[in-house]
Amino acid sequence: MKKRKGFGQLIITFAFVYSALLCHFHASELKENGDLYTALLYWFFGLTALAGAFRFKIAGFIEKLIGKNNE
Image (cartoon, rainbow, N blue to C red; front, side, top):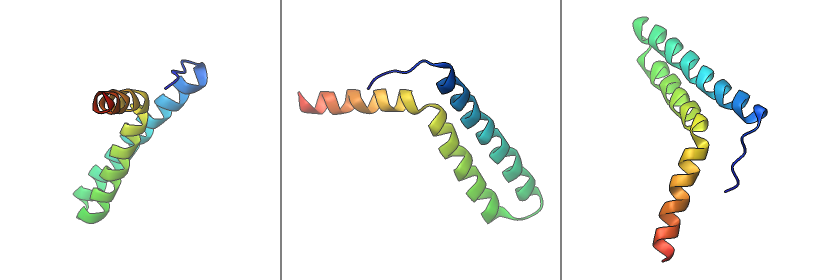
């Protein structure tokens, strides 16, 4: 996988992290108000946003796994 280290990629990574934080705080507020199922949904959204922030690390890990399996 080609690594891109441009300014745009950095901005998108920070946007993913910011989105994950917003989802977490909103989910915490929903849980305090008694809406557990919606809170769990927002925590899932936050987790996927955090995975988006680490997308290059995850891709590198998967490429290493696939490379080891092909040998």
